[in-house]
Image (cartoon, rainbow, N blue to C red; front, side, top):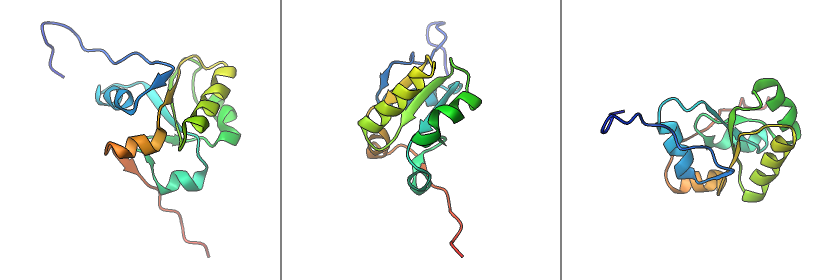
Length: 126
């Protein structure tokens, strides 16, 4: 990234609620030091999700987050609805995570602006 007028660029600070544009700008910054958590179930996640997101379904969200992330890690919560996202964020905040942001509009908003998604191939049932 070029320096303009000697100013070192910095990422947008994490807010309790973020637009997809804020998250994308943070990812494009280059050293995001953040994690995108998708709280949907595994099958929905496998169909498609924000590129780079990890799947922590709601039922195991706090347990798995507590094992894998520091309480100060910047966490962006994504899902299908704002209600689902807010519920996941509330669980993490109640568990002591201090840097949690709800991605407004979730995956549908991310896809609506054409940002990258990925899918996971599931093995065929035998």
